[in-house]
Length: 113
Image (cartoon, rainbow, N blue to C red; front, side):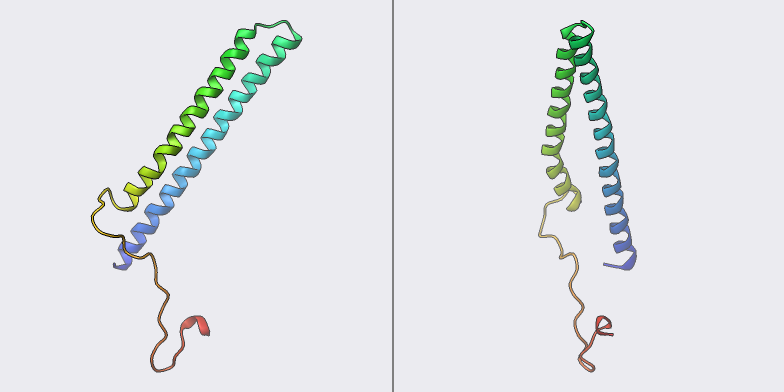
């Protein structure tokens, strides 16, 4: 594998990690908003004589959100496996990196310096 191939693979991996982080942040913000809505509904129902249906709706929205998150998490390992093999499952994957071998003459590596 040439230098450019390795650089391309590293860039693709970094992009995937960045996308995963963005999705995680978006999920966290959505959860925060749903919890806020639930808290407001409970407060109104308890202290201001609000409708209990709003609490039920907020709980249903939270349940739906967590069901979607669980479904996405179950689908993620399969998607990661396809991405790492390039969509093909023919043959074993090449090893990621092997440690550099010591030279014959000096019996040292750059790590020894």
